Length: 383
Image (tube, rainbow, N blue to C red; front, side, top):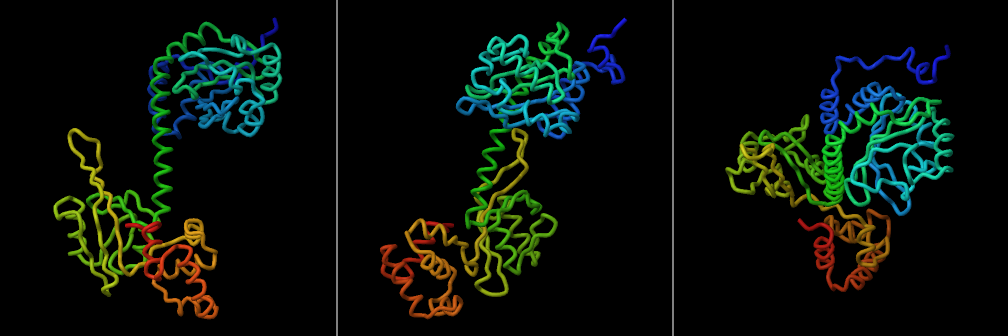
């Protein structure tokens, strides 16, 4: 008696063990939300549970007439086959990524066979295209998280297996549905937070304001580039194993008191020279307590009069309409260099440098060098 395709494909592969409970699998899915590395293991378990070849978790965002996957978590086999799958199954060649075939309802349990938005040509394209990826027919569970966004868990049978969802498959997806809704909401929220954090960190790194977030033990939680440069320039403090270290025990005690809110919001740490004095100002404290999940972190700003602000000549050029030469001169003046020193530094005549300064003053509509420096600092390097 001939075995059917599905029976042949199941031979030689591990079967879902009856002692593994679906509730445990659902719990593992929740655990993967905050720990992305666990998704591979979870999707492997789902794949095994349903006896399919591939299980992929995707967040899709609409862009005009197409759907763009912005998050893709894959099982271990799909991860190894990612280049082949991305060439067709996760590309615009796949009819599922057309906007007119996206889910219409809040929830969706559907398949290549049942989707009413696929034409016969779409189904044939799916069959041929998926076969080139080593995949069979697909079915999925989807949830809409926003008007132009949804999250799907897409499952594919093995190559050559064109069966639709079985009643058992449908029942498992229905069991997952309420949990999938909560998971999708958590994933969408975390993705939004990560996007905001990425933008915030980019801004913080672009500013000349030196910013540090640390705990009460002076352990660094986050530090921007300006603060790293400032710490490297000053003798009274350093970064050692992600901890802010002070040369003086009195300085360390003063800073810890300010961070804890026990010594006001500002303090000064002296260096070897007057210009090396370090000013610290607390911007925000996050206190932990019974009603809060805080980590006792404090955000503070650092500055030192002897450290010149970092100004990008390109920004000065765009803001004031200066030439590259004029903007370069202006940024060196902001850094404390004289016109004479700048001319020697650049290897040009002092008269040429003064002509550049005169032109820069006219374009910035100020009459004095000090006014030009102040205007640039107020625009690009305000503390």
